[in-house]
Length: 78
Image (cartoon, rainbow, N blue to C red):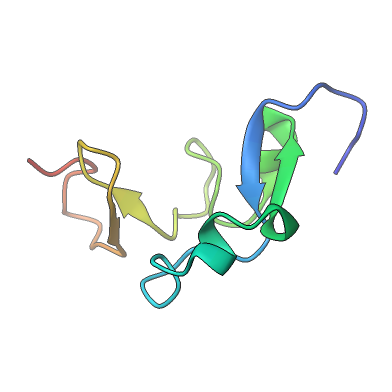
C-alpha cells in the first residue's frame, strides 16, 4: 500500500467469499482489516469497479454478497 494518501476504505486482507462470509474471525477481526486509500484498494485484484479485471463478488441492493455472476446478469438484483 502507498502510505502516502489518507485511508478511505477498510480492506479485508483475506478476501471475503461464500465460505467465510459468516465467519467473524474473517469479516470482523481487526487482524484481517486494513485501512487503505481508494486508489490502493481499487488496484487490488477484484476490487476496482472501473478496472478491466472483473469483480470477484457482487452485492444486492441491500449490500448483501451474492457471489460470482455471469456477464449478462445486472450488477444489482432486486
